[in-house]
Length: 319
Image 1 (tube, rainbow, N blue to C red):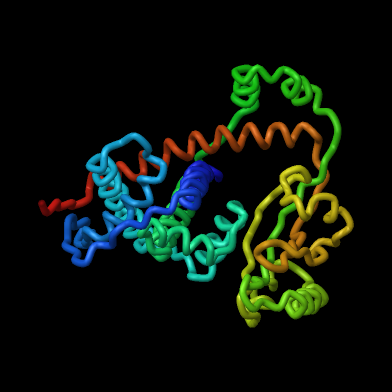
Image 2: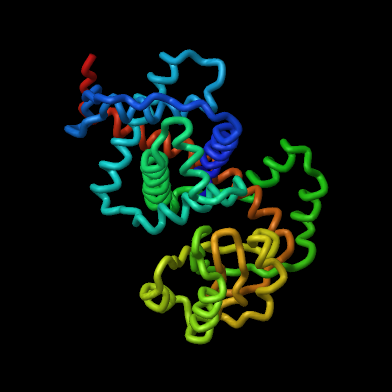
């Protein structure tokens, strides 16, 4: 499910603005409890930190409006975190660091530069990472709860193409033209730090790992002993949905094996081909439209889920 992508895009735009600016915000010396959510406190410092971040893309709004928005978002976050704990969902520090580095990569800067840019606005990188962690946990929660209930029919897909005025793709979909490859993938990242990183040594580690890999089920255990390395499920991707560095290179990779290591801003990256199948070319069109419709339905279900949590929550404001 991709309903969290929009929040990621907004955050990236906000951080771009952050880098171009440079005003240094004053950090509060003291902090007080402002809200208690099901026994969990939200402090004035947390609200101020979130307000500085939200203020980057809430242009034209008053400081009071931004503070209220920050407070309400933190209340939502507390409910999401408590629900994730109840269900047993957690996100590791390694996953958060990888996601943080991914944001920096999209902005064409290093994680250290991103940390510095945040600090220039008076925002600690740990606050940004806490927000990331909450978003990632919530996405897992919503996906896990509603995956089986979201079904997109052919009629809905054709209707969506009609509304977009995309007659060409609609014709391809109806005629079922051509074929393409669909892969089920896992991504392996061996991080190379911007300062003092040894890319050649990491490349040798990647090649050794590639030689050992023989199936996706055991990939996590193979990568676990390596420092600063992570395995991420990419799920099912058609050829045109692959990351740029891997397009055109997976056709000859056997199932259960890793692709040739690629140097990227994050370090050394490979993908493991867990499954491969040939599908009709119209699937690419169908998949994109279906993802858009799933995102809309996912956002709706996410709001309903959060509203259900709010309805039974005990929220005490301290003014």
